[in-house]
Length: 253
Image (cartoon, rainbow, N blue to C red; front, side, top):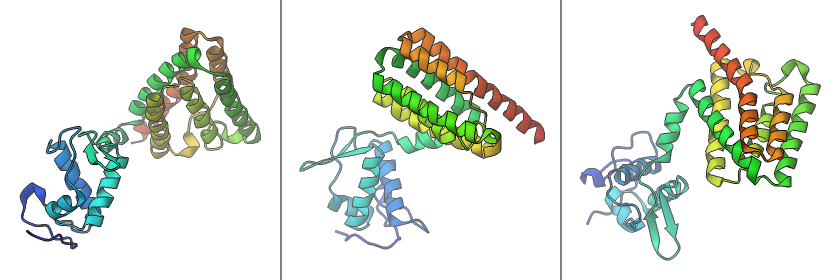
């Protein structure tokens, strides 16, 4: 039996061995190889994967390298470790690949998905919100208004972006759907980064406090249709601003 190696040289055991690591770390290479095997269905969902010792021999790396690679894949949601039982396959789909696809999408695409998430969240928030949820929205909006008053020359841009994201996150969390919240957190950050990349901070769309307040009032009313309409009205202005920026950006090319 061949003993594990700690160098970056791959063995000759076909798909069971690491590809040449080159300048990448052994851990990165091990992660890639394990992802490939999971995607190929070598271990079905629910099945226990080989032990660290067995994987170290198959991948021809040290056990510490395997342990770190497994830790990364557990964090990514592909594996799950059960104390005293081992590590099991949770998903054969790589969430990182999905996120990379989102990152390659245009700002309009990401903004449209975020709008869809927020509209549904507003509907749910209207019937599920608590007094604490409304207090969080109003507190975030108040902080946003304070920043706008203090920095009128930067309304809705970098001076308020953090408070604005805090407000919208509070609305989504008021839906009390953990899955929706986690997806939205990613898209919220993606929208901001995509817009910064495309346009720069100085061209970020402005924030209008009145439409934000109208959304809070609609959610507080308990009417899901009114809340959705208020959310779409709020999003209409920044969406139109993005469309204009995109048109101007395209014209400059």
